[in-house]
Image (cartoon, rainbow, N blue to C red; front, side, top):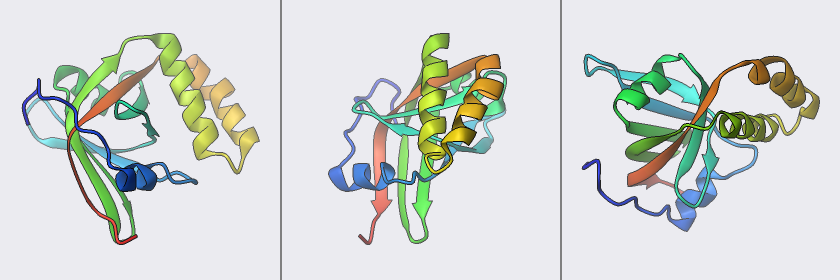
Length: 145
């Protein structure tokens, strides 16, 4: 995977799988300074350009992505799965980071809207948040349909 290579679009099947409601969780893999992999469970949003992930500043995986943008993201549902590899771009806009986490909270807690609003107001608003655009350069999947 070459850092400057062009992003690849998500197929309709992959997009439908990733954009299912209620949403699935992803597992993002980043590279620690010593080159070893680090994994974390993340919420994500599907966009025309790729996927958006968001974190509180200071966590290990966003620190890793800032240093080395290469990532792998796996989303699974029993035997169906999608793997996306590429290069992440930090979105250095604090307001956008807050907006993204609010959208995700409402999406991931759609069945509990009061909980989503509590998370947004009591936790996320007091945090420094960062979003990343995950630009797919390779997508693989096994979707039985």
